[in-house]
Length: 463
Image (cartoon, rainbow, N blue to C red; front, side):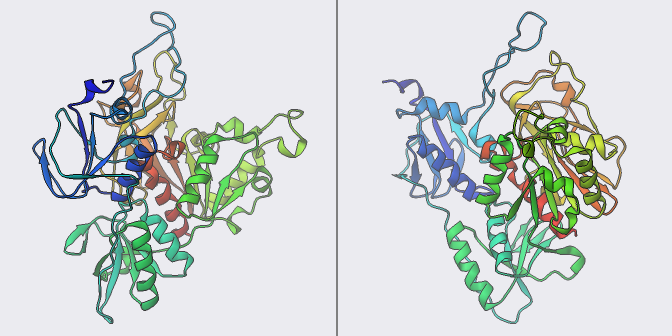
């Protein structure tokens, strides 16, 4: 049988995940590719671990076993050079794509078959959501867990309905008798809110908690519906298209921001947050060359547009620069931050689409809901030297000093070791957020979506 070599392997996706909804989405990606998946009807033990009912089981004895192994096993890409000691031989595409790493889902892979009662999965349903019953008149809040990506859909729906939503900044919050992390969303009680939350919990599979009102308003902030401008440079930008798709999937309202709009200025009157998708400074500054396309689509944002972006930030706006777009604020805004990858020779430093280990500060509002360690999708991206510590330059995430590579190929690990990957920089009344890797790579890196979503909400709440 073609899958006999994999017959004794089993992958288990426990029902106990920090973000159960994203785990279900991963299962449905596998199902879309024809992978056979089962679901345990009761609790069971395997590999020395106890798993609850509802956990997913993916057996090696199936026709698509090689596909399962390809998606759920780290890639080990060889160090290939054009000639000995020469530059790297470029791969056709990326070199690391391990699905569970990208999506932030824990998968246990066992070199054994297991005996457990299961049912076959056609399409995995969203987890069962719930909203607790509460007594009216008590100073309590409904709580939405920020570790779930779909919590941002819930918040956007609540904001659209004019509900009052807060965000907790307390180090821990007692909800349902357990500790919830900083960044927990809080929603005031009320008949209309209760009914809407019931619908949200059911459709998104969220478990809504209930916790006491915080004693200090300083420990919470109001969440506002963000006015988002998504920069759209002419000539085609795949990263902009994926960003647009993700914003739509998670129900963030946005407006496409064209070169003419950036050149016109007065951006703060229209936007709280401006997103710059991955692009070089030259591409954004100069755009399409004259004579290559009709005149209306040439010229880029120009130096005037760059100046308008800086004025937007200094007046209180938030600019989120994604991947190589960080070059614009680093070059034009005078930030005391250096991209140490910019001057590295390709023969010494080369990461052509790999998954790297990332360490985060979950107490920073940009990393709310994130675990202390995650996987970053890095495609010849920047890395930052922020110099001496400063209350105006905050490191949100950094690469560890060793064992950076999780999947793919990295040449010159020492270049990235200990460097900042995500930076939050204050400039006068506003801020620049540097997301130094593909937080939303091809709509697949669910494990780091929250860095983008948090940046957006923080920008709206800080104005």
